[in-house]
Length: 335
Image (cartoon, rainbow, N blue to C red):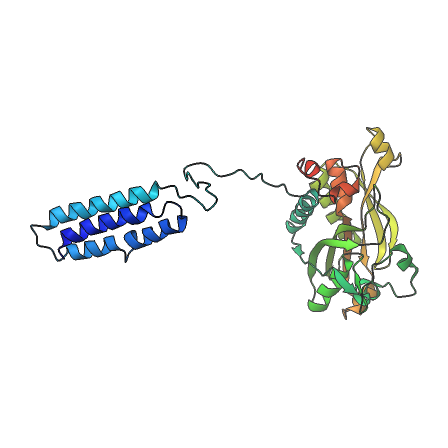
């Protein structure tokens, strides 16, 4: 069969097959593959064109190109109908559907901001496990079974002597077991306590634990770093004070307050009329903690813990901690 007759035959066959594909979109794809694919009938025609005489090539080549364009045009403009007679007509030039972007959660923002402040002065980030055992959560931190400090925290106990950690301080034990001084880390994460859910308390919350261990670390070093953090986060004019406190794993221990002011009724309420607001707890690592991780007790170091929800509520003026966990889009869109 001559190439010219092949062209005419393919043209007739295509028209016949296209007419039968009106109600079946899958047949349109089949036609495309049959005629326009790399191994399709049009590709075979171009292959046969190479065998034609030099005199016939221009005419035959023009006919094949014309046929190809005709087939492409009919297939691309064809609107196939689905089985339910609903036409599928897609305009690829139209813009896509709009999907609104989400916001970073205020707790995540605060964690990132605080982490970046401490990373500037050489602290690295270490993430511990949320499921711990009694040793790492209590005993290694100088809180033995009979210690009255255990009464301060109602713990979620799991099976096989496991529990949900009540503080991120447990992370420092893991890190010290696997690393030798000098150590300079912060450990952000979720912690869990069996507390009544109210405006100011929740059954889970977030902390950032900090730990620095080396030779000749002093309480003055701790105060300097805490003041640096306060000025970086709350502004260079912030006033801070340290009050003696008690934590089983640090000695001496302190709580750090910032002067929040008494500019509104809310300020009077949250500062109890003093203008001062507790921000974090801190202290020098107790030598007993070093013994529990087989460190030389002559080492020195400090630790601190920051409550993230408290900072977030202060920064963004949030009056109810429960709002941070309800997943209400109307609330989260504000941040």
